[in-house]
Length: 126
Image (cartoon, rainbow, N blue to C red; front, side, top):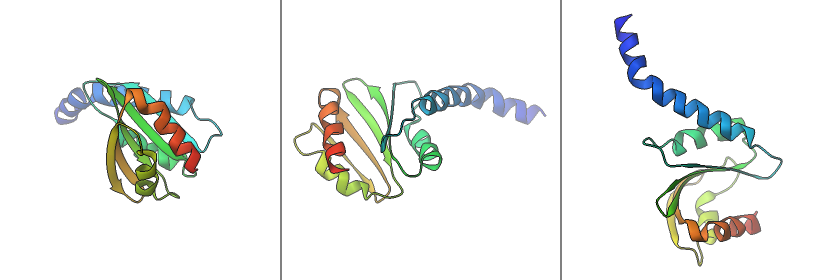
């Protein structure tokens, strides 16, 4: 119908971009307890949507999805088994970053320079 064509014309490019990121993320799945996927910033942010979909595909993992924006990683963290705000609070000690959220879903912004130490802090807690 003309209405559906209009909607697809508006959402189609974003949906294609999202699906490409999702497929790329799924290729990176490992046996690690942490599912980490990062991507360069686009015009649109998909971190929340990707992390929500990935936690349903990998419910036993800590899902971390981030996009690189300027000098920071903008992150969405999801888990069905971990109290993520507590994990995040400990992982941020000594790190240039901030974040917060709910028991199973948080957002964070971490300096690129501190990102590896941030991940090490998370791994040491798991």
